[in-house]
Image 1 (cartoon, helix red, strand yellow):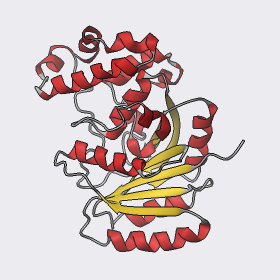
Image 2 (spheres, rainbow, N blue to C red):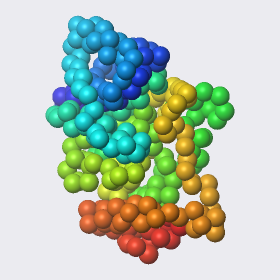
Image 3 (cartoon, helix red, strand yellow):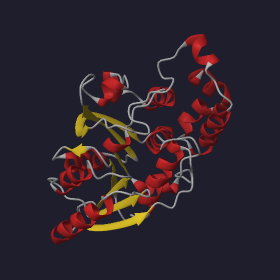
Length: 280
């Protein structure tokens, strides 16, 4: 069996304080990537010079790097971030798996080796892994209250949980781009982060897996657009109902549209009635 082709997407924006350590951790993997796509969102610092220096060094070990400016014109932060990552994945045609990377996190040395092995075991389209965080709580899964038992849940229970709770942090995730692109719903709708949307999309197809093995050191940096924001995940009962906004109607509609392509046994979870019960 041939070795899978591995791609990496890094999105940068004024990343100079952290980027060298992030890029070095990518080039020091026990299982090196084949191609790296870097999407820069209009940096005004030394990010470009740092990328150029890194590209010159990794090309010597056979890693191909493509660096491009963001093409997104979206102003809403979540939508803009999601479109940047979608742009990067779109340039990595032919890759079997793609690891997602934030500009300020440090990869553990065996990240690609561990995630590639898990993705190769079964036909997954999204792997959501854990990461080590600074301070308290100590891991991403602890921050997002990801249950210990969810690794063994069947597809229906996992989908119900993922519809209501975040389980995936993009910088610790790996995707099978062919599967997601083929769905016709790859580009996240406005207001959705890429990791949240793609993990839900995979869950509707029964191809999401959660792994508690940490693969990154997640750095909490000043000025993060999203970070460990959990939104309304912990809001329950009438308080959650009162927090509903007009934009939530569009979000529900986007989820309902996934019913057409969901696995037959999971389509019932995406009816209007079931979605309202799950989310509200």
